[in-house]
Picture 1 (cartoon, rainbow, N blue to C red):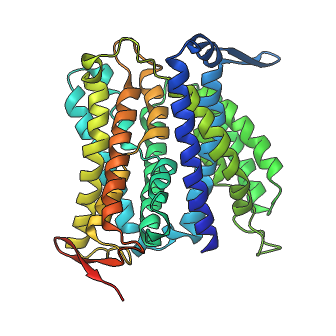
Picture 2: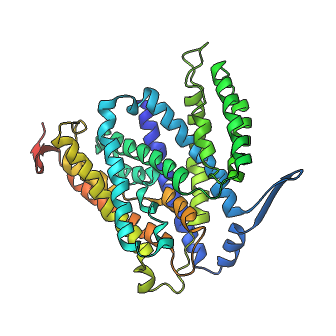
Picture 3: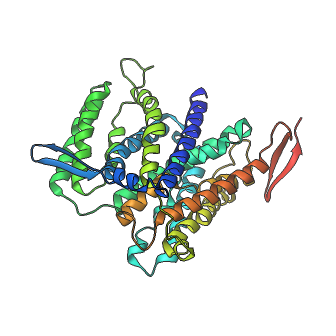
Length: 405
């Protein structure tokens, strides 16, 4: 329980830092410092060993390199949750799993409805399908200890499946022309990683060295390099066979949390959220791409998540999380519309940068803001506090406040 509390506290604090980094980027991009901001994100960085060369600007190094660490952490969390955590019990994971699926399909369909006539714009269909767990937990943490732990677990579980879905989408739909040689080099890495795991190597260094080769190979292969982080994480041992009390995976996960929450993600936000509002007008905001993204996040997320929840309840596939009610779950469904980090990441893959005629980041920020504010206000009204000690008793139509002694 202490680990869960620490996780929530860390993610909430990370969400605040992430928000500050995004706001700072917006301020700098719309100030006299804009020239320096552009110089920073477009600064060329070259790494060369013999004839092997990786030449990218700073923004791409952040998105393709540092974000691999974020995906590595996501992979570690997925493995731990699947083996010993919330995702290890089919009865507990069915509702959040279906809610995550619904929360990805509905936003994608709404976006497609706005952009189906333009194949190039349709490439952004997956942008509103992702939930930003750091931001969502940051918002829900503003309500303090009054939030039922089961409600937080439900939100985290949805976000975990959401991240898994986003990883699959990136692998299947945002892959460029493939290099068979580079893919072969990447494939050679897996037997070595499996062998390290099989013989109970618990030192992380050998895994990371092979992981670096895997990352470079995928970078050159056409498959997005950040997926190397997820694949590498699946080979990190959960337990030390000689010392069952020691978990290399959990130890590494704990060590990486601060680096990712307070380093990698804020830097990513700063490098990608610098939207220049110069020349922005109503036509810019109502362009089908940002409008479709915002509508997908605000409307699609809540519809998809709640539709899945109601189907589960109607078919008796799952029960409501303990101590919660439908209205509170609806509040969580609104928070799922906060799609900052992964949405920004996918938008970069979908459009290869920021097109001149529209800016998908406007839709991401507007949709996320509306979803976050609406979710917070609804949960603030429906979750009891010390001054108003009521419990939301669930009924088929929502809740009825009742006195709690």
